[in-house]
Image (cartoon, rainbow, N blue to C red; front, side, top):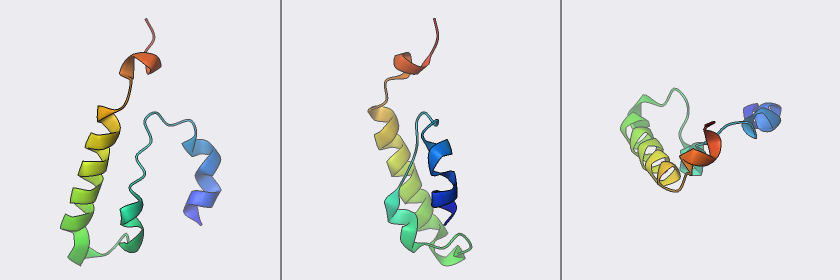
Length: 59
């Protein structure tokens, strides 16, 4: 529901981190916080590794 309401806004993000593996973890799920962190961290590293910063910065 939240994604559907903000889908258009997300197209303006550079870069956009979307670790779909987090879909099974609730926002308040304290038991899986370490797992959620690892998933997000790995997704961010992968996304940034392939991100062309120069294409988004002004000269």
